[in-house]
Image (tube, rainbow, N blue to C red; front, side, top):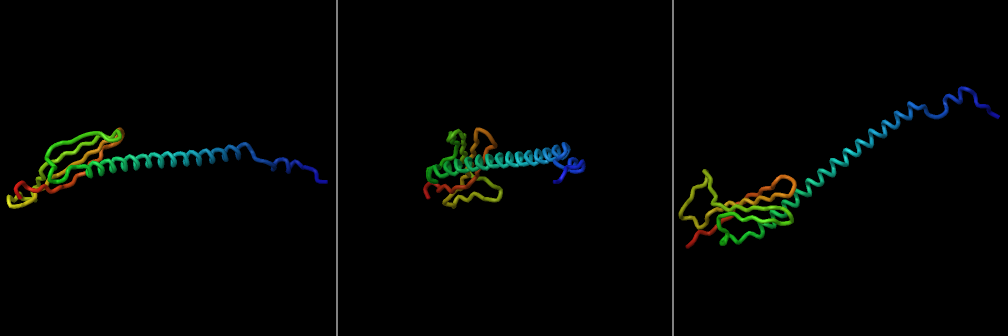
Length: 134
């Protein structure tokens, strides 16, 4: 039969300091994981908000009148709590000369979509408008 000696009793189990160090390591690991999850969730929400604004801008661009009925001016409205604004104006550039012989005149179309939270998204495109009498 084996008797427990004083040396066996001092080496058995964990000391309080070892337990505290292990708990500190676990706490640091859990807080790091929590921070990573929070960052991922924020990034996912940002991506979803950008995609929602992009889809609304695409829907607005698709719903614009045909080029022969597209007139300069402003149009605005709201879709799914996203305010949108469309500005149609003649395209002006220092690099482009306006020729009277041209059958088409360029129009710049700027679509701005603003979500309830977050930055606005702006998409610009050029559409050609057939000149009257051509």
